[in-house]
Length: 379
Image (cartoon, rainbow, N blue to C red):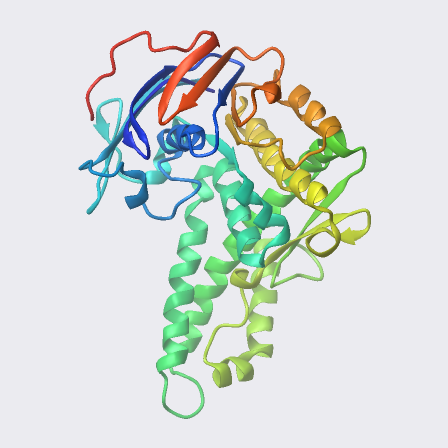
C-alpha cells in the first residue's frame, strides 16, 4: 500500500501543499515548528480520517481559514482510491472516497491503512495504563478493521452501567443491573479477545524490532482485567467475566462504579527482566515505543498481505548514534515510509526524496516529489 500524492490546504500551518510521494523512503527536513510534523499528520488524516496528535479537529484548521482540506490518492492491492476530506470547525466533516460519501470513518480502512509514530508514544511505555489501552485498540483497528467497533461498543455499555450504579438510591442493587452485567460481559469479552490476539500478533514482531536496535529484547504481555484459568474461548472468557463481577459486586455498590472489565486492562513491557515503565532508560523506553509501532505495522502487513504506510515523526533524537544508524537501515526497504527529521545529517542514505519544510512550505531538495501538478480544489 502506498500514498501516491497528497494535498493539504489550510491544514495547520500548510496553506497549500501538494506533493507526489514516491515509493520507498521519503524524508521531510525542517526546524522545530516549521511544519514537518503537520505534513505527516495531514498524511495520516487522509489515510485514517483521524489526527494522531489531537482528539479534536478544530486545531487542524489554519488560523483565519473557514475549513481545512486533505485530498490524497492511495494505491493498494485492490487498486487506487481517491480520498477527499473537508475538515469543518463545527458539525460533521465531509468525506468522500472515489467521489462517494463515506458513511462510517472506520470504512476508510478498506482502502487505506497507516501507522504513525511520534514522540508522544513515549507515554505508551512510561505513562499510565490508559495510553497502553489506547495503543492496544489502535493495533486492533489496524490489523482487523472489522473489530474496531469493539472498543466503542464496550465504552457505551460501560457508561450506561456506571450511570446506573451512580444514580441508584434504593437498597440492595439496581433492578436492571443484571441486564447491564450481560451487556458488559458480551462487549467486554469481545474487546478482551481482540486485544489479546493483537498482542499475540505484534509482541514477537516488536521484540524483533527492539532487538535489531538494541541487541536484546522487549517482552510485551497483555494484562487483562479478566483472565481465564483454562481455555481461552468465548464461553470461558464470559464465564470468568461473570465470576469477577460477582466477586466485586459489593465493592461496586459501595463505590458506585464498574470495577471489572477492559477499562482496567494494561500492557506489561519488560526489558532486561525489569518493568520498562519504571526501570527502562530513556533510550530503552524510546526504542520500545518505536518498536511497538513497527510491530503494529508488521502485524498489519501480515494480515493485509502488504505493508501499511509508515509515518515516523522525528524518530532519531531518543536513540544514540549507533541505534540511529540501525533504525535508518531498518526503515529502508520496508514499503513506503515517510519520516521527519530536524537535522539533515539524520537523513538515511537511499531516501527516494528529501523535502525541506519551512513555515508550512515544502520544497524538494533531492529525488522526485515536487509539485508537478496544479493543486485541485477542496472536496
